[in-house]
Length: 379
Ligand SMILES: *Cc1c(COP(=O)(O)O)cnc(C)c1O
Image (cartoon, rainbow, N blue to C red):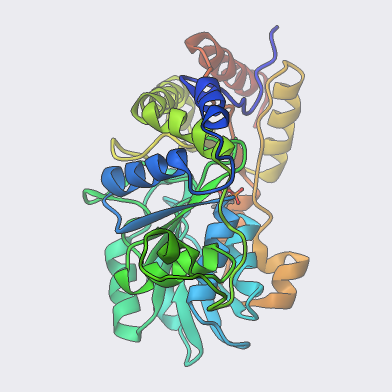
């Protein structure tokens, strides 16, 4: 049987010809014509004040952390069930990570637990829209406002999902996107910082340009550019932006395909949920089809299912090792609530293959293999 990989990078439109065009234009460093096209696309499509391409979502999170002006000992509230970059970006500034448990239904930060984790030192909340499903942003923004905290949305998985009509990544002070090859829209490595709070636009541009006011210089707002703040080099090359722009042109088609895959998995696996063998994810017509996972009864059942699927050339994956119990999490953070849901679900969740070029036949094969596993096992 043809193997079914977990993920597969793809091209869908003009990626290669746009790269050739960027070369022909003779501008390969950052902020050339393709980067500007991408910026405008995000600003118009997501309704954000300013979009800035970065090397990665990690880089966008780091820029956000710099703008939070964290002092050593300041605290940041975030879920433990997330990718390491969500925490690392803030730990790099000397802040203490305060991990809060997730909701059992969406696996997003449990907004009801945030307020008790707030102390005098809390400066920011970092909600992660897991699987492209929105966090409860109304409650989170309300808590942030009452306690004077910044909100950085980790929207790495959430491009083109919405919450009450608003794009994810456009609601907090900052939003961070990823175009890593495992995300919906890809450029190999890549990301964007969405600056929704006007007060931070100028500083974001400076931090991204090695701490210089070069962006203002190019707009003719200052007559020379110089070192004005701390910063680093966060802007991608035009080669990356050219590839990304070609993907953005097809973004709706990519989202529709991924949603189709999620809906197909859901309907083919529904009988197993009805008979109590596994649990399926919650998603609605406003989510972007980023991920399809199943939740098994036990860690042991998950291990046996992985072995069973791999023997048939199907590659599922699981994640995350909860950050609060990881070596760096213990060193740079503490828990701000019990971690019962995180500890339980992280041991039982399994992600199924999901990528743009998957066929209906592939989806049927994976679903059939999972149904066969339960038919032949007594779990
Ligand atoms: C992928 C991901 C990141 C990191 O994205 P990069 O672009 O690889 O830096 C951060 N947070 C979450 C939740 C992710 O899924």
